[in-house]
Image (cartoon, rainbow, N blue to C red):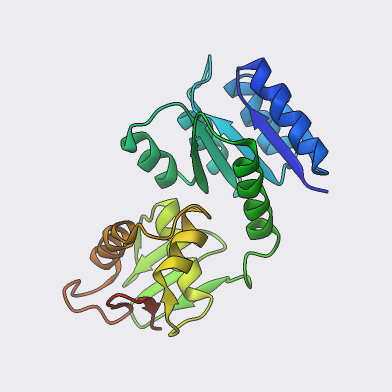
Length: 225
């Protein structure tokens, strides 16, 4: 049984989701404001957090930012906002998936199941990967290039971690999108191009001629150690 924290200031939606999640065997915790949500996410050890962005005290983005300082719990963001900037900001801060209101309960339940699987399985754990120039410490979330610290975003870390589980092997675009951004993704190859270019600028000595993060056009990416 998984423990799900649902954060929303709409009591009807909280009740609906609580009934649906309990009906599928989950333990449910609820919170109607941002401050109690941060406390619950860090103290009650949920397996997944369902987080609304429009909260009465702390904005959901700020809740996500505070949670991500100390926890890697999967977070599914709910929002009535249709602006892609909000989605990008939430994903960059470490959200695992994004659902726009209104949504179908069955769709959300499917996303929760996927998040629980990723949380429980997550592939083999990686502690660190090192090349002659680059060290990626996944346990401490620390990247260095020639001994100098380089800041990576949570999304960049997830992308690298997915690739480094099978170093040197091709990971398809669809698998990368689903593992990094969530199960509803699979065709947004432009996301991969943007983040691959960002990572090359940060990690490669010559971003135009990468030797570690390689693209197989139309197929996927591989990270060569």
